[in-house]
Image (cartoon, rainbow, N blue to C red):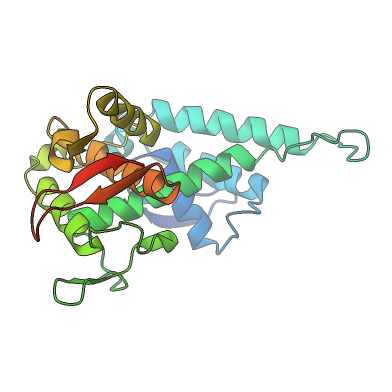
Length: 245
C-alpha cells in the first residue's frame, strides 16, 4: 500500500518523475503496471525491469527502508528478462512455461492480499465494497460470493473486522512478515486433528498482526470454496463455528 508521501526518481532517459513510497517490491511492481496500464497477464518484462531498476537506483534506505527485498526482486526481474530473450522451439519444448508466470501469480496473490487488507482495516476508498446488517448486502472482491451456509457474509466480515481493530497500530501491516495462506490452512488441519469443530476466535486468538488475520480470512474463503469446511452459527450474532465437511 503506497504512502501518500512522494519522492523523485529519474528514469534511464534522464526524465524525473514523482512516485509514492512503497512498502515492498510487489507494491512497487503493481504501481508500475497500473501506471502504465499494462495487462498483468502479459507484462512487458523489459520495460518493467528498466522502470523498477530506475526507481531503486534513485532512492535510498531512507525512502524504502530495508532494500534487500527490492534488490532480490531486481535480480529476479533481470533473470526473467534474460530468459525471455532465449529462443524457444514450442514444437520441441511441449512443457515450456512462460518465465513470467510465477511473477504474475505472485502479483495476483499480493493484489488479493492487499485488497482484503484494505477491506478489513477500512482503508479502501474505492466505494465498491459495502456491508449492511439488515440486508447482508456485501460483495467481496475477486468473485467470492455466498459460500458460507448458515453464516452470512456480514457476520464473517464483522467478526474479522472487530479482531483487526484490536491490533496495535504498529502491527497493522508488515510487508516483510513471513506469513502465508497455506500456513493458516495447515493450522486449521491441526485443529481438526483433535476436534470436530472450533470457533473462529480460537483460530485467530494468537494472531498479532493484520497480515496473519488477512491470511486466515483468505484461508477460510479458499477452504469454503473448495468444499473443505463449512461455517455455522447456533444463534444470531453467536460465535462462528468452523466445521470440517
